[in-house]
Length: 474
Image (cartoon, rainbow, N blue to C red; front, side, top):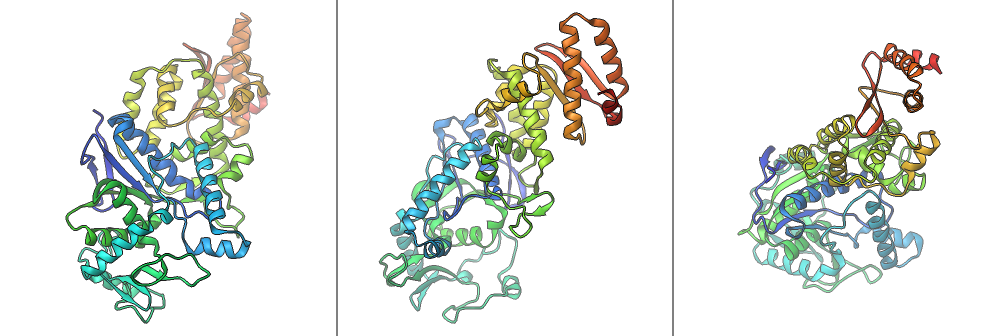
């Protein structure tokens, strides 16, 4: 069985993954608050944990892995959107949840095993809050119920902070009904014009943190294997989840492994509407960017490193996938193609290492193994855009691969493909004299042209590549 090692935020070490029950591997990932389209940054944890889900399914069997990703459909942002638009809250959340599901599916993400909605689990939240009050870990004050942070000795362990340091660094106004500045809301009152449910403390609605604890317990139990999300959730959301869950069920472990992905930037800057670099997944899809290309760009950066989305990466990803889809079209999967890819993914989801190995498979004509790797990474072609790319570049009927190290402009990629096309065409026409001339010219400008099994031409751009010489040849 493939060994899996994962970085655990809680212990700050990479640990061998040993599930509580190999026949019932359980994972919980924080899902969306449904009031608007998912932006590109929202999509990164979806792709990361979909990749982990696929790995676990492959290793333990698809019927032995449970993946929970919740839907937050009661939240102040949702209420504000309803008030702004004049629409019913239920209509907004239902529409937005379906948008989210469709957009993530376009990125190759499998549906989770369970997608619980917060509004369907309010009774479970009320029961957990009441239990915390009874045990002295929470208290009621002015229609609110708050968690008593200092009642949990390990508070701050996940994020590596002490309670006193958190208080010293806080710049928020402390509500007068709080016993301690760090205490957080489990339940808050609702007026008649706001969503609300009955409770022992009056009509109200749950705080954000309690919903994940209640739903995780309801579906996965008091102990499960993995909890994931973006690193912006480490504090306070995940810290608070641990505290309330461990106090409610001290006999359990809650989540044994905590995994967090780093954030996303666009062209080296934080995504922001004011900078004009903010866009949703749907924006890219509507512009004609295939979902598998977006996914491939994501997989090129390790999940624990900041990711920079650039147009250059998008172009390179599209060209690479077009090549790979062409050379694997109609090819049967070779089962041994999984071996190296599983080794890379088992090393803390090393997707960049997996992609590097796939480049090796492509360059050596191992199309059956490459197809196995594409399947495992969720990179199935959507539509025939890659066939159109072949026709548009006059390469129909030829199998052409392109590999390079370092930066390579789109113009150079296109020119190198055209050179390879001319060489392969000359060889097909048995014009070996012209083919030899083209190959010598290519060598002088830092390009290797060679025929390999299963492909008409493999183009390799060397480190001594001179784009000026390539341009002069055109």
